[in-house]
Image (cartoon, rainbow, N blue to C red; front, top):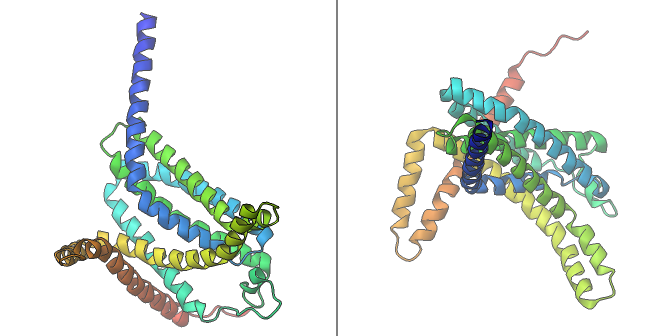
Length: 309
């Protein structure tokens, strides 16, 4: 009897693991787009810190990301179980925050410190008058805040995939996706920010091929980081705008209708249909971010000043 019960238990466990494996694969495919945005956003967060501090910064943000998911997974399960209607408003608030941060970056870019001759490229990106350690702390805090929103979207998408599954399958799938996504994103970020070191190491080798690859990496690494900075900011608008338009059904339907119309154009229709939603989400994200920055600026301007001691 005991043996039969044990076999039944093992069979149940095997069934759950099989379901978790299937659900995890589906969720990974659905969150792949967000993963790309997450990678671009976080890679550009380490720009401006000293070269010897890049990996510690990545590790600090990765730890913050794990903490974010440790909060988000049980929170998502609780919200899904008791107040499922709250998921969309919370995601939209997060999307608006991404747009706000993206536009704030653009707004303050004109005040960016310009490097002077002989100044270290990493130090040059630190605003004048700011302690590099304080600047690094702000970078880490900003990256963790941004990660929280993107992690919330990943968890929400995954939750949608496993919504009809048993509770244990939901918990296991969410946990697996949370861990794999964090390791994947920050492992790649660490690799990207150390491309220049790899290039330097290869360039010092005696083999001609190693030297050539090393020199190519040294030349490409700064351009890649600049590109990721641009892509990361654009991703803020695209992801944030996409969350907002998805929550506003009229806009979501209008974007789909626009994509269908341009898709009917001969020859280039399929290409335009593919890029149109992203472009419109990007534009809406910029507008939403501009409005959010304007509102926050006005609030700060008219907020009563604290009385002097």
